[in-house]
Image 1 (cartoon, one colour):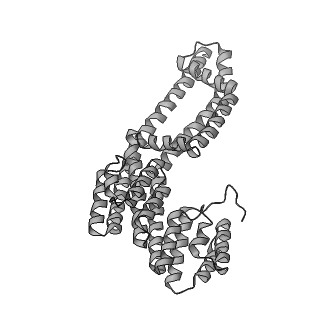
Image 2 (cartoon, rainbow, N blue to C red):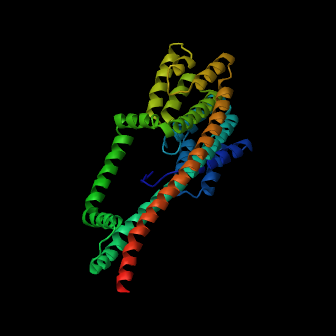
Image 3 (cartoon, rainbow, N blue to C red):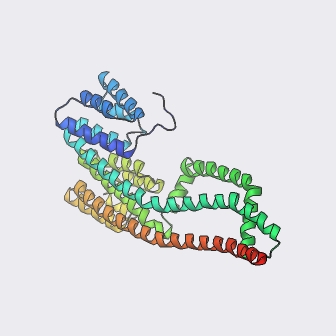
Length: 352
């Protein structure tokens, strides 16, 4: 199958696919027939090709989990591990339903996070675009007028003109440096192991964002672990899988060590309690789940708890950012207006 840079399947599309597949399986449709119907209802052309490729693999006798594993860009390790457990346990209908519920929760949570950061990002981008237009188009024309009038300009106006001249004269240099930095940052922070680890640790040390990111990772940890354990995946494999999909190499290393400790017979709560990146309540809840034999239920409750707490923190952070951004925009607009209106008023006064 041809894969390009823009071929992707969103969390929403995968969640709808899993929900529909679960409903069809519960209704008694064979897996191949259900997937064929889903391929006809899907609008994403890339996803259609993926589903049809899976159908072809199933018709050749390949297992569902094996067929899914050939498309890691669409179905992550958690998804494949859950389906593999469903095949081996004979609880396919039950596990696919649990997987659909987890996918729906993941989509809802990720949507709330994206919606919370959309407004600040929009305001910042608007400020940048407006600033570029001001520096490139408006200020040069005003400078010509001010130069002809031979006025003593306020310092704010002189600073505005100097900034505009700098961007006009060295804008191409800035663009080259910015492009180079973006390429370097993309490689260092997302492809280089040392850079990814550094970036992961930075996210967990920024005072304002530390609790927010910790909450996001705990939602993934508890929710994914609960689903895998409930599906019948061994605890060691479940912990390793969670570490690979949690999204932060710091936690990946910690959970890799936890899996090694589990192989030696050490309870999972012990190494977790020694990791400051995991809040104390997590190791305590894991210990309760281990003692009662209901780790999946305890982790599901913990995931719900962190979803509520993280939503509150996101809303609080958003409510704090809005007035701060408004003040910054107000000060910027005020400075620009003052820098332009005062010289124009001086010109009109001299004419009179």
